[in-house]
Image (cartoon, rainbow, N blue to C red; front, side, top):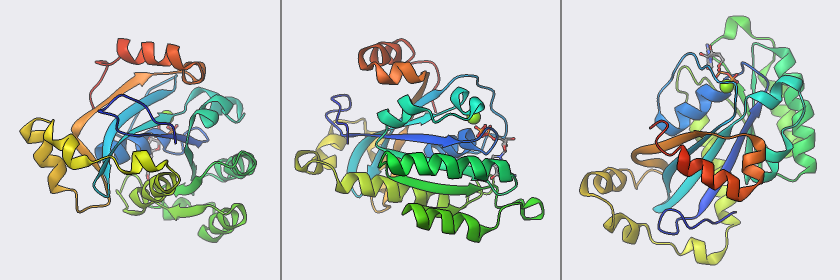
Length: 242
Ligand code: GDP
Ligand code: MG
């Protein structure tokens, strides 16, 4: 795990969302971080989302990169994968081509030893199904990664389970010092409303802490060259609020 001194020393967890065009990566990212579903997204560049999340009483800064551009030429977005602690790989059950693409990427992620969850999205479109659930399950089992069939549109709980399993996996591998980070100390420094909101959800395993988050435009090279990425984040810090 990459630790960063940004939110009162809260450890930082980085997740890359990968998959073919149109499978629901942007919808999934926004759903996970905001619990909302926005039907249409228009973006020609990767977006880096940042949100504070409480996992088992511990506050983390979670960064999620929603990859757009690189997937068009069907190459693995190496910079984003190298930057990440874990990957969420998405295909659509209505699009066999996207499943084939995910198989190709899965192989590369396995070689790169990245913790991965394979997500079969658009489970609400059963009548358009081209990929059987068993095919996805078998591919994930072969790669030794978690598998979930989800509907981002219908807010199926398994999509949160996918992120949670990855976050827990990363957290288990984190250094001891970070594990001792106290969320109660952190919450004491927050404004009352936000602290109350986080406290209410502490019994849940993995939840956003307060409503605040941010999103910036961020290409792979920006992630790779750390200083440049940070400068861009400051510049874009008020671009949008989740
Ligand atoms: P991306 O290119 O992988 O980022 O895909 P988007 O997030 O832009 O989604 C592509 C399209 O699929 C959009 O029209 C979304 O509204 C739609 N979509 C995403 N998730 C679902 C889902 O679970 N069910 C259905 N029916 N449509 C979805
Ligand atoms: Mg997208």
